[in-house]
Image (tube, rainbow, N blue to C red; front, side):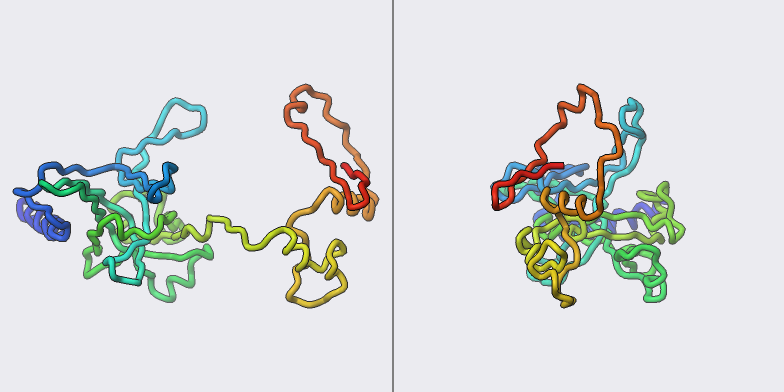
Length: 270
């Protein structure tokens, strides 16, 4: 047991040696953090948060008072060095904050690096998302020690239940040999690709000037319908109201005006 402790201490010391000025005689303040909120420089709003909290508690169900312990570890995309153009992925296993004497505060992360499984395993995945496992040298998981400035983006990691990993294994030793699905920020962040007028111009439905075109380069549906479009569709399909209108005072709080005017000044509503 003593031998294992010495090996762990040696491994940790080798990691800490990668943190500038982290020496017993030089550091006057050292803590392990559970959460760091990340802001864009000069912005007050939190862009994202990084967690490394084995004691994190979450409500089992909305409205209940009882909370259950669910370890929370964030995954990130990061660079191994400030001059590297290549990004890798991994899960945060420690957030180190320390203050060297006569120097400003330092913040480093210990990250267990991910890599892609074998080709046959990768193509057997159930979801159309990136599948990863821990990068290893022999049986040892590769752990990188990086400054927080090397983080390029947050990641959303889901245990791959189709590869014999259960939700209960997440955050335990059992996940060392597990697989994970990684969802990047680009997959969940919506960007405006073009204006609504541009959508209409590229359509070939009856509401577009391109309605007679069979060019595959045009869209064949309206992502959004105006009140005029909805009314035209109702008339075309001979649709009439076949449900009774609500007679409830609560509905008044949610009423809004569904009315538009066309170019001739005529009003339409539903």
